Length: 182
Image (cartoon, helix red, strand yellow):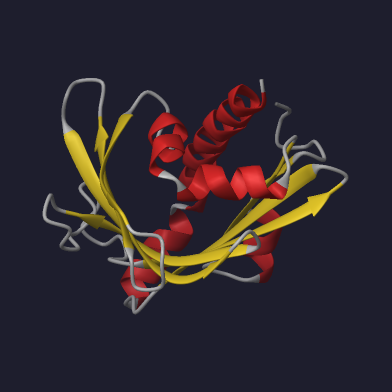
């Protein structure tokens, strides 16, 4: 994988300046679009790459349909857990996924982020998958949903941290896609 300045990996800085408050990250994978979409939509694949580097993912539920949920636990190396949930708004295979992303409790109820009381409760995420010459570019846009001005400001201030976190997660996806094709 190459660094942030390569053609294969871009992050949100230019887009964030143009569209304040929107997180945008894009990565090109050496894999066909159908395979990248499959890695995002099947539990056996998500469990192998999703989440922060060093965390183990436990999937409580994956119901890939409009109104369906992906409810998961991110188990930290020290054993502590953080729960999250996606609620799908659009599933257009293999071109696009739209979902509301939030921290959750073990039962799937939305809760405040464990690291910040003013982080938006919900983020609307749109993932677009485009293929060219057997490679797939994934572009994700994230924007706070129904957030207060304070929550929007916190989200915008966290874009650099999100770039780092998502960069590691997408590195794990790239490695998983390579294993899937081996």
